[in-house]
Every structure is written in C-alpha cells, then in structure tokens.
Amino acid sequence: MKTRSLTGAGAMLGVVIAVSPVATAQATELQILAGGGMTAALQELGAQFQSTSGHKLVFRFGTTPELIKMATAGAMFDLGIVPREVFEDAAAKAEFAPGPTTDVARVGLGVAVRAGGAKPDISTPDALKQTLLNAQSIAFIPESAAGAQVLRVFERLGIADAMKAKTKAQTGPAQIVHAVAKGEAELGVFLISVLTAPGIDLVGPFPAHLQEEVVYTAAVAKNTRQTDVAKAFIAYLITPAAAAVLKAKGLTPG
Image (cartoon, rainbow, N blue to C red; front, side, top):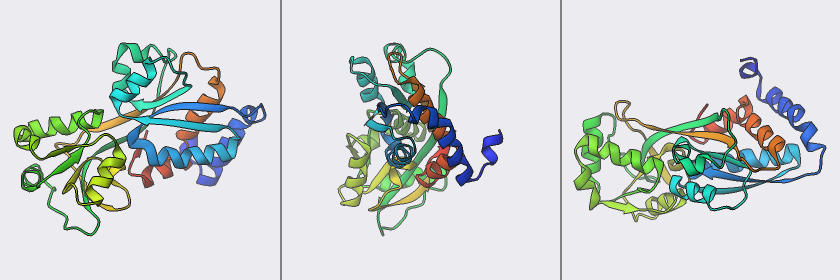
C-alpha cells in the first residue's frame, strides 16, 4: 500500500489530515475496550492521537473473558481493540457493528526472568521443556486467550500436569511483571509485549515450532455515536508511525 512507504512524519501528517474533519467538531470522549497485552502500546498511541485530534480516549483493559463480560454487560463503549477470540463469543460479537474488522497487531509467547537474572535456554522445544520443568514457579494468566495458548504448549510438551504445581496464576499483565520483578515467580511465561517491561528481562520468544500468537482486532461498537472518531483512531493504528510504536512495545503490526 502507498501509506506503508510514508515516513513517520509523513504518516503523522496523514493522520492529522484524516482526523481534521472530526477534530474540528466538538471534542468527544471515546470509550475503548482493549486487550491487556496492548496496554503499553495503546497508552502511548492514545496519547499521541489525543494530542493530534483533541479527543479523549478512555481505555478499559482486560483479559478475553473480562472483555467479553464488559462488551455484554450493557455498559456503553465505542470501540474494541481486542483478541480475535472475543468475536468467537456470539453475544460479544453482536455488540459490534457488522462488517469487516481491522487486524491491528499480533504478538507471540515468550519467557522472562527478573532483571539481571540468568537467562535459561529456550532455543528449542526440548530446551524450553527442560527450562520449564527446572523452574520453581511460573507466572501467567490462565484465564486469558494467551493463557490458553500457554496451556496448549504445556500439553504439546507433555508437561501439563507438572506445570500445575508450579503455576502462580495472575489476574493481569501488570501482576505478571510484578511477580517476576519481585522474585515471587522465577519465570514469566506470556505475551512478549507484556514481558517487555521494566524490572524484568525478556529471555526470548518460544521456539517457532511451538509459537502461537494473539491477534488484536479493532471493530466499532454497534451502538456508538462516535463512529467517525472510532474509525479515525483505527486508521491511525495502521499507519507507519503507529507501527513503529507497536514494534518498540514487542508487537508485530497488522
């Protein structure tokens, strides 16, 4: 696409032009449901969009089950930037406008240790298996799309039962980082975007043979009155300027 060849500055100018008809109207507040694995990226991108457009973005981050509950609980929202798995729930999908959605980013699984700690070998399936078996404790979020992927990897490695005793279940991405940074868990096993954080060191991604990805998809809410602003933010999220931020936060654009 032509926009893919734009420089960061040119991309931002394009966003200004694209948003300006919306920005000239009365500033509004956009309520956004978003996957927790995109917290750092969306906070930065949201701040940039707010500065450019004059609109306020309010994010409600959560795991896949939490996002499904938010979408179906009757509370008003304007936009979702959520794991694809949210749309597999019929009731949640019905709360979004019909039509195509936009894949914004994807991210795979990785392993992290406390900052400055020794980095174990996870370069092959056998090495990852041994590292997991040797670990005293592992922090992740079982009740999430990424957590389900982690559990499937444990099953593929034949260590699902052994991992149960080692698992320190967390309620959100920030809690994984805290647990590993404070030494409450030896390893963090989750999305690379979550494990790219102060206080912990990313060991690396899962071996390609075992890798799975969470794909974050953007869709406008069925009942929003802010369709133009929601679409403008989606358009910004797929610019080269936004892609640079996504990459810096451990995500792959698109």
